Structures are given as structure tokens and as C-alpha cells.
Length: 141
Image 1 (cartoon, rainbow, N blue to C red):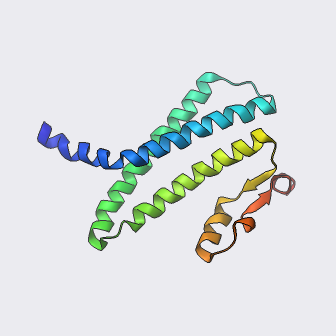
Image 2 (cartoon, helix red, strand yellow; image 1 turned 90 degrees about the vertical axis):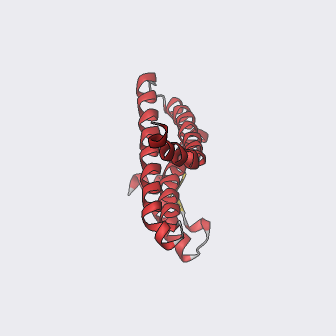
């Protein structure tokens, strides 16, 4: 049994930093999401918050496992873990966007970050100011 499980244990040990970062992002999003909901005057149901948080954790575990598989499938041949880095960066950026949006809403800031614009600008070497958009324009348009 130990010989069978050893590769899996070793793989998840390598993925531990990615999992920890995902947990930090998820629980930070939970914290600011709860604060933003309180500010909006919404009734907070603990069971829903826990369920959504656990769903995010499971989603992250799945995405990290997929990127590990992609990395071993393609990166071993190329000797560059670029596919793993790209997929994880996109997944983390989406969650980070949620954290920032919830934080901004909690603080009353109407600026939002557009992930699609951010990704386009990252590859075109643009300034971060071009990525910010006004939330009032987004709601009206």
C-alpha cells in the first residue's frame, strides 16, 4: 500500500504551497464577502457561506490537480512548467479579483478590476490604470 500511495503523497507535498495560497485567498474572500454583505444589509446565512467556501476549496483542489497533471504531461516534455503557471495564474487572478471587489465594496470604493482587461494588458505591457473601471458605469451599461 505504501508503494502505491507514495507518488500521490509526494505529488500533494509538492502542491502544498499552491493549496495554502488557495486557502488564504478563499478565506480572505469569505471574510470580505461577509463584510460586504453586511454593508449591503443582506441577511447572512452561515450554512450558505460555509457551503460556498467549501465549494471553492474543492474547486481549487481540482484545478491544482489538473494543473499538476498538465504539468507532468506537457512540461516534462518541454522542461518548462509554463502551462501550469498560466492556468494557476488565471485561476488565482479570478479569485483575487473577487477578494478585491468584495474589499472595495466593503470600503465603499466604486472602482472594480476587470480580469479580462488585466490579462490583455499584461500581455501588451499596459499600465494598471487602464485595467480599472468604474462600477457605476458597469451597472448602468
